[in-house]
Amino acid sequence: MTNDVNAWMDNYERAWTSNRPEDIRALFTEDAVYNTRPDDPEAWHGHEEIVKEWSGDSSDKPEDWTFEWTLLGRDGDTAFVQGLTTYLNGQPTYDNLWVIRFAEDGRAREFTEWYMARKDTPA
Image (cartoon, rainbow, N blue to C red; front, side):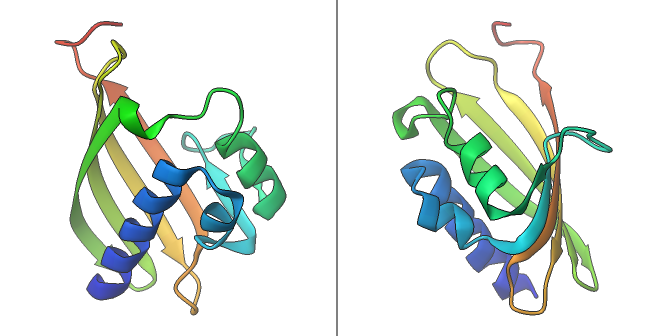
């Protein structure tokens, strides 16, 4: 699964950079759930909502951030990823933890993120 996680993460960064609906859709199953925080009552459900929320007016521009990540571990179809998102436009730097549950075809069926701004960056 490590190679699958690496490929998925490469595709995630590609979608984050392009904000193209087809790149975003390619990451997720049609009925996927994207949680922007654990147990999120406003989770994004399915391709159309994920694309809409991801690529809305507040979407990140590729020149505004850098991202590093490490695979912390995996258990069956679930991967745990630690990330560091550094914004270059005055926003805070964020430590990230992602839990990605994969379908058999390698797309995510569920994605949950935790993020926390670092104290040493502007709020």
